[in-house]
Structure formats: C-alpha cells, structure tokens
Length: 286
Image (cartoon, rainbow, N blue to C red):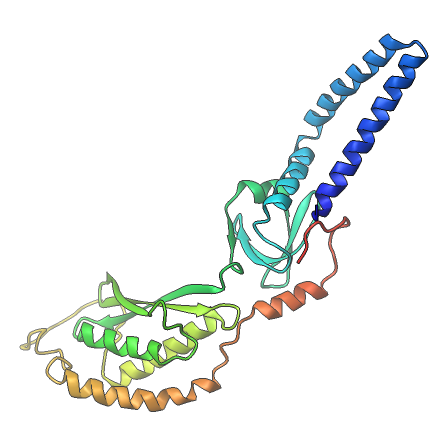
C-alpha cells in the first residue's frame, strides 16, 4: 500500500491493539480477570468520551483518510474549493494548504474540503472562457458575429475543437450584447491574457468597420430614416466582409508579440519556494 497516511494509521492501530491484547493476557495470567475486563471496557468508554470532545479533530483526520484514498487531487494541482482557488502545496492529517494566485497561503480543514465540491483545474487543462461585448442596434448583427468569429478562429491559442462561438446574450438599453465563447489550454495560455488580446482586436476591427459600441442611452432620437436605413452593412455585407477578412489576416500576424502565457507555472514555482506554514508530515504525493 503506497499511501503514507494509511500506512501510519494501520501501524499505530495494530500497535495499540497488540499492547491492549498483551496487557489483557498478562492480567488474566496473574488472576486479575475482572480488572482486565474493566480495563478494556474503560478504554472503550474513554475512547467515546475523547471522540466527542475532539469531534472536529477526528472529523478532519477521517476526512484526510478518505481524501487520501479517493485522491481527487494531488500535489501541484490547481483546485477551487469552498470559494478558494490555489495550488495544492501540502496536506497533513488536519488541513490542506493552498497557495493562491496572490501568493498567499490558505489552510483549509480537510473536513471542509471533503464536504464541499472540489473543482480541479489541472485534471483537464482545456477550459472554456467567455466575455461580452455590446454593439449598437443600428449594426448588422450577423455581420458583427461573423467578424468576431473570424478574429477568434485566427488566434493561434484558441482551440479549433470545440469551435469558438459568438452568441447574442442579452438586449440592453442601447446595445445588443454578444458573448464570445472559446476554448484554450490553460496549462499553456492564460485565459485573462487571451481575453484581453481579443477585446483589443474586436474593438479595433469594429471601429474600422464602423460598428458602433454605444454607452447606455439616455435619449435616442431617430429622424427621418428608419432603423433599416441606418444599417450601413446590410447592403455592402459581402464585399466589406471579404475586405475585412483580408485586412484581419494581415493584422493577426502580430499575435506573436502578445504575451498569452499561462500563469500556472509561475504560481507553482512560488508555491514550491514558500515555507511550510504548518508542521506535520505531507501525506500527498506528486
């Protein structure tokens, strides 16, 4: 059996049983049978009293045993539990230590971890990211969606499968809000950095194509023209899109200058350099 905590528990339990059995046999041999029975009964009662008095300690210890057996995470994994996100640095028989992305140590009781949902970001490095961008009601929604999809598909860090999507998410007071969905490998690239790059590119292309991104409207006055007349992209959609596609192909050649590297390795290195905030044997392995 490879689990160090289970080995330790088995050794100590067997040692205690052997000592109690030896003491019982010794008392029986010297004729103190009633005293031997009373001693064993008292040991059981004492165990119950101690168990109630140290309920939380026993609960954390039992939780550490179950976590060691089930192994929902290992050392170096990035997990989120009970609202805390960080790298697993250490697990003892009482608590698990996380190092969050600010470099702070977070100690969570093992019972808290076992009773809450555990989100393991390392088990599957591919994650889906999203953000919203609003466009004016005078824009051609289909054309705007096509432009954004083209931007995402040409980004080298965005996975082809599952394919990126642009969906109408909500209708605001002055904007139609589009939500961009895309998948990345979080071990290689940073979700926040890629979102930042995409936002800049989308705004740049929208400005070039005269797609408005208005602020919350206080008053909207439409004169003689109808909303349909105010859509400049409807009649020129195909040539504009082809022109925009060729321009974007040239623009995205500078994607290599953008820093989109993942921060996971940085925080793992910080966790490895940090001191142990709690004494105790680490019961997790890599």
